[in-house]
Amino acid sequence: MGRMNLRTIKFSKVYPLYVQKAERKQRTQEEVDDVICWLTGYHDGGLRDQIERETDFETFFEEAPCLHPNRAQIKGVICGYRVEDIEDPFEQKVRYLDKLIDELAKGKALEKIKRA
Image (cartoon, rainbow, N blue to C red):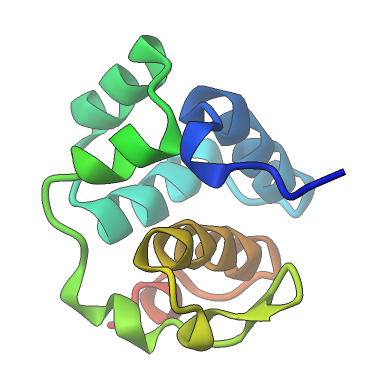
């Protein structure tokens, strides 16, 4: 089986998994939203709109108002890849998001996750 095409995966299908992962570790949906909005520049309404429209990851990132300038400070391994070394800019954005959710689930403070 080949790798899934990240571009065509619906954000609305992955979002509940992010929330579940966080909630299993006593974090909240609000914290998940906060982290997603920090990375993408969406406000809560824009994030909800993406979920309701069932946009794919490609559209989700294309329509993101402003990717955070500190996103390059997100480092480490996610899904077996070192995020800072991923060459495909699109895949790197998806993995940045995965990594932030992972850090949230591991109990990292929001200020640290947001590279404050």
